[in-house]
Image (cartoon, rainbow, N blue to C red):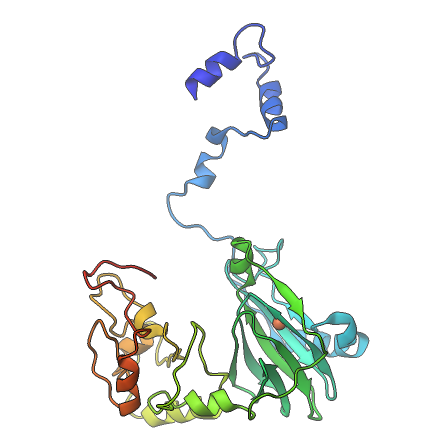
Length: 327
Ligand SMILES: [Fe+2]
């Protein structure tokens, strides 16, 4: 770098020491920039986020949702969503650095066009009933408190057969996807999909966690569960209500587990952990439902879990030699 500077400031060069502004302008026009002016912003002493703490008020947003529900059709809007934009992340809009959230409303009788995108999505249902989202041909019904999963590149459309407004919180990881320039979007050939399997099949198949169909394996990195219904979550809390101690920092937290091959058994690990043991705050707070991992040897608690443990897909992300091979 020093040699470049000494050459560029020689007498007769267009870049002279008494005209530093011209020198910087000249290199900018050449598509170059002086690293020394950006060093502190590019090589941080510690992580720094553009997102700032902020609380979005649902009761204040809801009247605006209702206004746009009357003023804007779903044919015009594609999705009628108010984005929850972090004050520190206005352009492009995001809620935190890797995630976007928004409040979506669909009115009785409406349908939202089927489409798919590489970004993964989840939905927390806030209010309403008798609506469903069809994900790759499976109708997944929504009730308040439910957590619905829409894995990336899965077709999905929404239909509302109820009588009251249906609202939910959307969460998508497109800020992360777009960072990798991996964003793709496609419209389905029809406005809605036909049902290809019985309604809520994936939810009924896998929601119980330790009692899964022995004849069928979850495939792919996404959770095979379409909906984690609130009534099951509430039942799980009720079952431990008298005994759970929780953690000092987060209290009593239950973890939504991914029953797929890349579930939290193998994906989550604390620093210094030797294998696939429970690592989340929720898991540390109490016994974790037994699941199998071929590397760490945690014993399965049920026949079906045992069978899963022999699958070559269910392996720990830590190599046999103990060196981490993935996150
Ligand atoms: Fe979508």
